[in-house]
Amino acid sequence: MREHAPRALLHTDAVQAACWLDLRQLWPHVDLMSLSAHKFGGPKGVGILATREGTAIEPLIIGGGQERDRRSGTHNVAGIVAAAEALAATDAERAEENVRLAALRDRLVAGLGAAVPGVRETVAPAAKVAGSAHVMFEHVESEALLYLLDEVGVCASAASACASGAMDASHVLAAMGVPRRWAAGALRLTLGRTTTDADIDEAIAAIAGAVTTIRDRTAARLIPTSEAGAAR
Image (tube, rainbow, N blue to C red; front, side, top):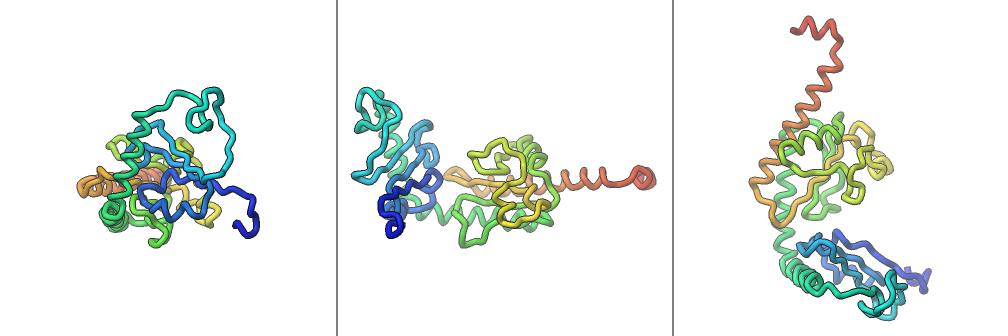
């Protein structure tokens, strides 16, 4: 990039990266990097903006000159220290934790594949991070699936966190050429430090049950009245 645009600045949103990737490998290629403490076990409401030395940025809040003239206001010392400690712990434990979570994720996906017909992963194994599983269920609507999972205490999403509440089929999956019969049944499952083998077993059972319920109800609606009466 620098060969073609030497004066351009590159910012990367690395909010989701700290748990899964070594940020040292990303930093040489960017000028600014954003992180969010709650994504790696730090306190909510604390953000980090890593800025390459010599990079000039305009402050959003001016007046007192705190944060090296980048954001005026009283320093949140407790939040800053907690975020730094959480990031250090995440960095130290990342390799071992990623191995554990990748094994749990693979067991989750394999378990869903064995328990539910018409399910497939969205991305190739080499492109996945350890703590994320994204699957699609054919002829299942995500909205109904999320409702049933919420009733049994399984937290999941049909889209990215920043698109929370969106119920339309993902425009990203559409751009990837995924047919709507698959894209409409997308489900994002995230694993983390507290995830256990028991959680995986519970999730597999709950998701398989919810998908079966939705498909049975859909099939019942599609049976003509005369046939339904004859079946009874």
